[in-house]
Each structure stands twice: as structure tokens, then as C-alpha cells.
Length: 140
Image 1 (cartoon, helix red, strand yellow):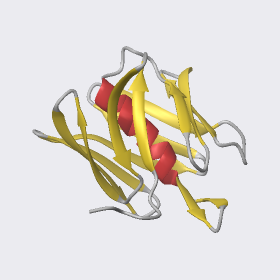
Image 2: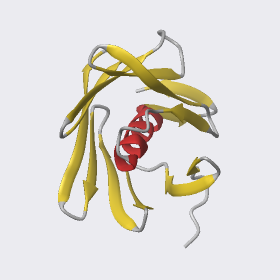
Image 3: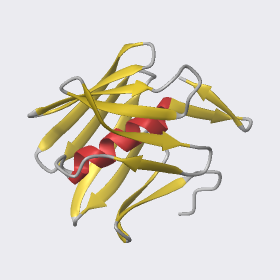
Image 4: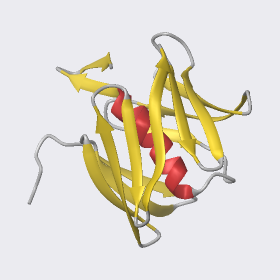
């Protein structure tokens, strides 16, 4: 089945495709042959589910800030500036990386010590936080 009007994100690292997902409220992806589901509920809650259940959750803690939790990691995504498309990733109060998305693409520089599914999830949260309507980025 072909989905028209959808944006598919191809995630790669060091030239190797890691996974892909389509920008929907709920989407599936395989990372290293393991199936995962990325879910967004409304404007404020996100889940990463794997074969053993929920692996990560994220929710808004304030304007421009999202808590991303996955045992043993507690991370914060904070918008770099009010109208910026860049979100910085904080761990232990320090900036350790970030994600940026545009209408048709995105990029991230997330630390390698985080598991790949968690890095993909953080990127999905950044993308899902933005809703594209009529060619304009509307911040959810």
C-alpha cells in the first residue's frame, strides 16, 4: 500500500541505514532486525515499544522541554531557542547532543553511548513535536 503525502525518514549512521519510519502518530520500524513501534498520543506523550514491552517514554514537562526516560537514562530535549528547529539533548544537566528537523529532512548528533533504539526514539520525538500544515511549521 502506497501512502501519499507522507514523509518517510531514513535513519543512517556512518553511511549504514539503521532504520526508516513514516511520520505518523504510530509507526513501526526495525532496528538491527528487531521490531519497534513509535507512538505519539496527542501533543504531549510518546512511547517506544519493543518486543518486551515499553522501552522508553517521553512527555512534555514545560514549554520547549520534553523528558525522555528509558532505564537507566533520564534525558531532556530542550528547544535551543523559541522558534528554533534545533532541540538539544541534555543528560545529567549537560548538553550531549541534539536533533534538528526541517520540512523534508532532519539530522541528529546523539551520543553513541545511548542505545540505537533510544537515539531513534529521541529523533522521532523531535519530528513528531512539529506538525506541518500548509507548508508552515506549527509547533505542537
